[in-house]
Image (cartoon, rainbow, N blue to C red; front, side):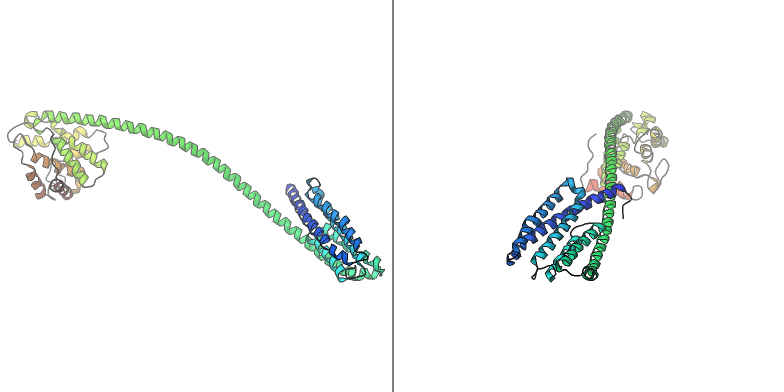
Length: 437
């Protein structure tokens, strides 16, 4: 089984070589430990023990040291499978030699200990060498062949009988272990391929994240710049609006002065009415924007009086029916003057409706109830209270108590319930008083 992707195959082989080197290092350490550990056994054998010690000390241990060194040398890493194979074959030769030296005795070549030693060596070849299928099969067969030849030559047994007996049984074991190596190799390839796919997926996702992060950073930079531009524009707009408010306020003040110059007896009436209307709106919990609109409308609610002759406005006696009908025209005239004025508030309608009454008895359009806007309902109460409490050319001021009694008596008839209640609370519970204009 070979990967179709050549680069993936190279990475797999490189990883396999690294793993083989790691396995070889452990095999060297274990082999050296076994050789050193069994030197005590050599001392028991008086006749040939020193020979076994010499083989262990000057043969097996240097081979282990050399193989351990080569397993760590990167320059020979591409040959690590050959080095591992030779290591196991040399150890097989050393093992067979040691077992021959031990004969006769309990540790000899044909003893149960000798057979166990060879079987352990075969298990090491297939479990600890990390050799691939054909290499592990070849090393296992050669190891078995070394042991078989050693037994045949040393015991002078019939070679054919030996091959047909114990050798074939061991061969089956070797082939089974080699098959296990084949499956292990396939499993490793599958795991490597899966890990590679995961790595590629992770790399792709990481790249996408980096690209998206870069895009978001660019977008964030643009948004930051755009926000800065918008803040500057908003600041400029605020400054412009403030300038417009000041200009509008100055224009309103000119209108107020023009009206009051025509009617000196009602000087301050509009200002006081506007202040009372503003306080009533605040008491009712209206928004700040609406409160400001009521205040401005209140300061110019009698602007229509500019069209009325001054002698009628300042006449010291009771007005005739015709004169009073002219006075009543000031609401409509004020609407005509303000209807084309650009403003955030419906100033023209408030001025037009400030003499309307809830029951429809007001003027100029006889509106009733909800047909009258809330701002006009508030201004109507404030206008009546201020007018009754203040001096007029044709009569003295009636006083604040008379004004409040009028509001209380006609609450729900002429005047809106909520507006009348708020006005009465201001004066009777919160001590509101008109300031001097």
